[in-house]
Image 1 (cartoon, rainbow, N blue to C red):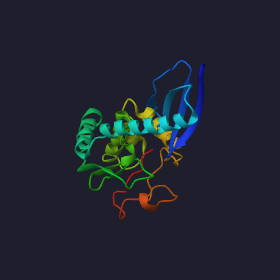
Image 2: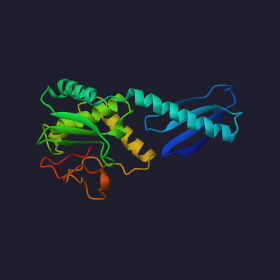
Image 3: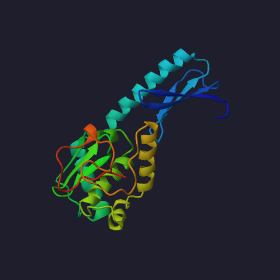
Length: 213
């Protein structure tokens, strides 16, 4: 960038770009990009040690702000009801919607047999439209269990569906996670072939939990 010296870091799995500016005298600021990476703006006069210290400080501040934006299970369930009314005519009626910590290879999962929806806690703090699109994806599976054209017609009704897919793929890349593939048919609780490990739910569900994107 013209007039700026940039350097990249990886801080605890977070991709960070530091932009040093001679025009910036005293202030340090930071923001999170749509792919989940962080940009930190600092004065050029800072030493590398001071720069590192500010990077750590600003990441901590951003994470604190993210935590304040994270909805609880009740808010998530209410959001699901609203999305169902807006995009699915109110036909998708989940019995429960909740955050879970054991989905490291899935953004969300749904068991059509009992109407339960689970979202990965990795989504907490992401933009609202991203969470909404994941929710709508899982709500659509209450109406169409597979990934047929009829399913995608429902799941892609959100106006920012493609943008959300791009965000999640970019975020996974920034974190160096294997990004879930688009349009894969669910192959049971273990999802597509490959490592499963502790990210799986519990015993197999008859409704075939779905892997998002």
